[in-house]
Image 1 (cartoon, helix red, strand yellow):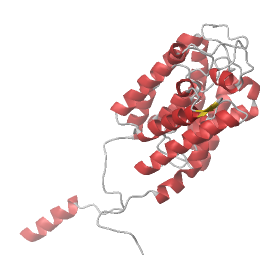
Image 2 (tube, rainbow, N blue to C red; image 1 turned 180 degrees about the vertical axis):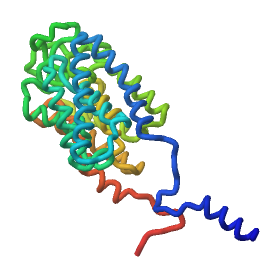
Image 3 (tube, rainbow, N blue to C red; image 1 turned 45 degrees about the horizontal axis):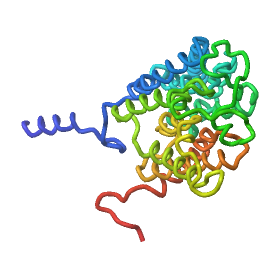
Image 4 (tube, rainbow, N blue to C red; image 1 turned 90 degrees about the horizontal axis):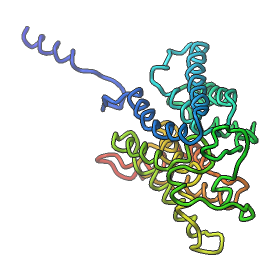
Length: 328
C-alpha cells in the first residue's frame, strides 16, 4: 500500500509533453510592455520636435492596430490576444515611422494593413514572416509616395509644407544646395525625418533599456550599425575611405530599425550566429540601397528582405546538439 501511494504521488508531479522542456516566467505581455517603455523617449522626442499634432498620428496608429487585431480575431474565430500588447507595439512603431504631417487616415490604413494582412492573415503572433510595421510602411510608400516623403523641419509645428531635404537625401544628391546638419543636430534630432527616427539620443536611451532588461540581444544592432558605418566609410563618394560613417549612422531610420525592428523575435533568426549574419546582411543591403539605389533610405527594405532569409539562416547556423556530432 505504501509503494502504491508513492507511485501515485510521483505520477501527480510527472508531466509528459513535447519539447521544449525549459520554461521561463517571461511572457509576451511583459516583453511588449518593455518595448513600449523603451519607445517612450522617441515618442516624447517626436512630440517635442514636431509638435503635439504628431501625438494624434501615433494614437491613431495604435488604436487602429488594436482595433484591427480584435476585429480580425473575432472574425477568424481565434481567441483574443489584445492583452499581450503586441498590436499596440506594432501601431506605435508604425506611427513613429510616419512623417510628422501624415494624415490620420494614412496611419489607420497602415495599421490595418500591418495587423490584418501581415500578421493575422498568416496566423497571428508568432506566424508572420515579415515585421508588420515595416511591411505596412513599405506598403504606404508604394501606395502614397508623396505623403510618405513630405518632410518638415523640426520646430515647424504647422506641418504645412516641405521645408527641406533629409540628411540622407543631401548625402545622396550633391546637387541639393543645403547645408548638411552637424553631428549635434543629428544626435538630438533637429533634422527632417519621420516622427521617431530623428533623435539618436532618444533611440539609444530606449535601446539601452531593452539591453539592460535583456529583451533584445546585442548581435543584430551592433553588426547592423557596424556594417553600415564600415561600408559607408570605405565606399565614399570620392573614392575609398572618403565616406561619412557617423553621418550615415545618425541619419535616417538606422537606429530605429536596428534596435527596435530588426530585433523582432518572430521575423528574425533565433541562433546567435544567425543574428550576426542577419545584422550584417541588413547593413550591407542598407548601404547598397543608400549609395547605389534610387531611394535615399534603405533600412526598411533591407530588414524586410532579410526577414525572408531568416529561416535559411536558422537552418544553417543551428549549433551542434550536446553530445552529438556531425552527421555523415
